[in-house]
Length: 568
Image (tube, rainbow, N blue to C red; front, side, top):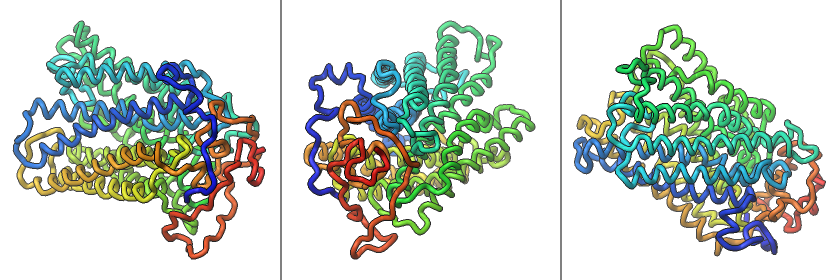
């Protein structure tokens, strides 16, 4: 897997300028992607820390460590931080920022200064949230349900909503920038149906970001206005309607699920193709299914509200629409499976994350159908079954996709390789820890244990202990990449394209030069046009083949020198 005779380019985006000002005032999309990466990594471990505190409290049925108020603050901060400050921006703002111009053959995004502004706005939102953590927290839950958030909560609701408002504004700017970039800055010859599937997924994600996020921003402002000025929008005592809040909140928050998961679906398509050396089966169906998921995401918010006095006819409609979302999602899973069929699969670290993603996303999607059913939802509503389902989609899906993409494009970002053995070990630990954490929660949820409670019936303790043990293992699995990624920045072996992957981003040096390509690339073929994988002595199809890929040409450039000239 490690390439021979590869050296770092003399000038690249990391060393073209020095000093803190060169980073804080940069308009280079690659550097902005790294700024996002550092920011969301800090928020990831902070939100994960609160998750571990929650699980430690749930080791025993009684409240041994924290009061109810403290526990409420912990699970609220866990949700707010990880959803709005990690899951939503994770892949679009980091990998998307870094890769979109590289993958479409552009020098930068359409609005570089707007791109930097979006990061600063994200930082402002993060600072509001960190201030809330420092001064005592918030206890409303990440959903900010009214009238509790507007009338009864004695915690820092307004500051927390401002933090979410700012990060939402950042998300809108990022999505707008990506849409214009993909429309207007593609390399000559890069037609829509030659685009990598990762670009398709980010395009669909950007549409959701631009159209749905303003509703969240308005909702957060209205909460602050209701709480501060008592304007009577959500408070029934003043003539308002708390159910209106739920409609507005879930109109954003259900599409937001796909802001988190669609980019992962794109990452997995790239990984499946690169590590089977095959074109993704049914490429056009997979591409269009991303847009279909984005469209369906806007019309299914009501399935979160079956028990909120919704009429049975409205509930039936939302139930049917929710089932329909499964169709484009299933298209992706079936096409990935067909791509894997009889493929020469290379089980490197990114591929292990991709395979883990497929399994967990499939189970998460199927259990979502349970909650889309009106009858079952009445039994499972607000139980740990919902927690387990949500985390299978968000952690098992979005986070697995993010980690898979991070491992896949790490050598592209920094020109150095992480230790592959540790990468595989980490992927295995994450998979085991995740399943041990959340599968017991399906059972205790089905048996009736409600979520958000810090005291529970003794018969649920064994399953809760298993879940806490799994969370600890999962925490170790997440810490390992942090250690070996930092180590690799100095000691990792130099790598240019260790996977011999196709795509414009691999046709330039690793790390890329400041202007991405030395010459304007011209695309003359479809995506994923892999040749037959070269036979490896002593290797068999489908076996563990970490060292399968022979080294790529160290002289590969934007013009495709040294390769079969698909890009000239």
